[in-house]
Length: 177
Image (cartoon, rainbow, N blue to C red):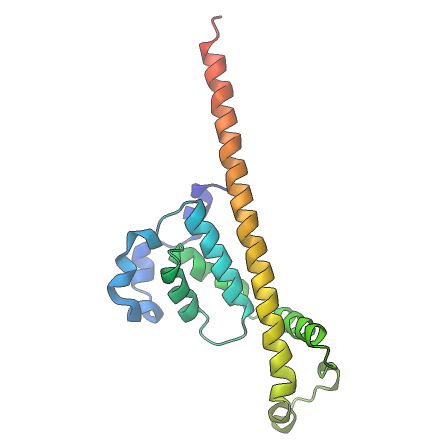
């Protein structure tokens, strides 16, 4: 992991300041800590982004932005990370959350009896919704913590590799030829 990789990945602060959905934050967006790219801010951003992308709700960017500000995480990277959940990935993510919730709660699965009708959906909001949110919370916590630890490890490993490389280069330049 390296700063240049993340700088290419995330939008410039001025672009996010102009983003209408974040205008409610006002001058908070001018806080420099929200834009820093270091091991701590990046790993926190990934943790928060992965967590919020797993939670089935509209406007995930609002709670993601608020928690990024609260935890001093890199705001643009948090917002980019929540796009892991998109129209292509949403179906498998919702099913994984539901299946995890069913497994954790020991309930029978309702998905095999699914009918696309308002009566069926409205009559089973609790039966389907509780396992869905419970499983999504569990998966969100597990995946976000795993991503956080992976970023911490990869970042440290990259720093160690660069340090060893500089050390080797110094040895080579110091040797008399």
